[in-house]
Image 1: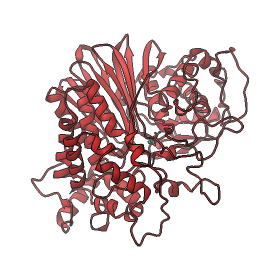
Image 2: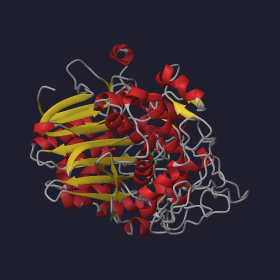
Image 3: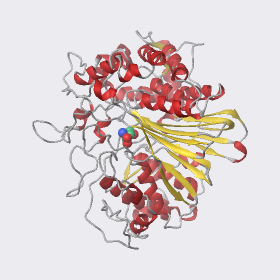
Image 4: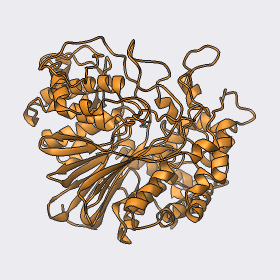
Length: 603
Ligand code: GLU
């Protein structure tokens, strides 16, 4: 395998090269090795699937000690803050979906970042020109940084459903940050992609550019600052972050980003304050629920658009016969349903505490049936398609309205899935938005701050209709994160999620389609080439999805493809008969993920 060969080559180079100063060391013989990565594991007693072997090991450690799926999820997430700091960490936010075996219920926690209390609709506009700031200028600034929700999410989840304290669940990550982890190809390339940004912030450069360059693959990297920060939190609890010394440092960093003296970049300051941090709350929200093919599909409600958009698309798909015998027809309907659901997402979904989201109607079968009438089995609709009217008054076939705007994609994040011996399940997606977030590290604390507020629309996108996702005081930007749990007659069947900005929604949807309708097992459903249609003129397509007979049929139906190297990175667990669990992660994308089980058994 190519990726392995590259790793081995550079590892050899690292062993021969000079030792790094500071916190990066070549990985010597006998030194700690990255645990092996395996994309599929079947066993009993509990399971963990993440993008990273150290994080999966941290989760399994909690399970082994008698912890719950929630203890495992928090330990894994904290470890990802060390090894995947460009996608996850306490400087960001996320959505936590939990199935409780004892009560048979699904709960969700909204740990999304909030805009400062002073934010107006013009947050992302150039004050002089009145135009949207260029994306990178908005991203790499204090303006984009929302109040982080991740740490509070961990604490709230543990309080409700954990057996262990935050202190206990942070221990594996503290050890990892202190003793170091092995830099892999993904880490290296993510630093490389952000190197010019990190170089402009000494606190980021110290952490991620030892010797002024991205750490070599195969070297060991420590993050002692983050180890100390986690230790401080372990000792004093989340208050130290939300109202203590770390809160003051976060606010100071946002209000006066610590830029290198020689940086030429314009770095705007933001207004996030200690009061914003002190006032931050994780919100328990109703999960979204649709029935699909006799299964109950639970997801995350607004401010994420994940649950409503996946749910609406599934309801639309209910109108069609989909089977593996005619993959092109199934994919055609999948792409068309995605476009319709995205049009409605863009028009109607935002922070439900600020705007009215017609969620029940968006998730109703009546609305979906009306939307399904827009799909011509023999021809792709010109994109973008117009949003529908989720008004409770549905005709078998509605009339089309004006076209909606195209949908931006991009971004990065991480998803993890855990389950325990009692049958509890966690599906948790967390992010700092772009890979590398704002690029700004809180000096001396070892973590990057998010740029989540660029998930707001900078200007209205819905023509004469109101835009549900403009910035506002304390508002949570709309997300696409789609942590999902599927039950079959009340028992867990499947849990999964993915990173990938707006493509998260289509990745989750297509993986469900592959597994439920197209006869694939979960590893194949995850590995299969992806297509992503988000109500844009073109459909993103991974290389392996192109040049096939199925692709040719879809092109004949009018679909236009744009080649995209990689879409998403799924982790999930399927629940098999006799208490067995199959943990599944990507075999290749993003360097492959890591699936683990407590007690392996034969597949
Ligand atoms: N910020 C994105 C969202 O909430 C997630 C990060 C990503 O782009 O993957 O939808």
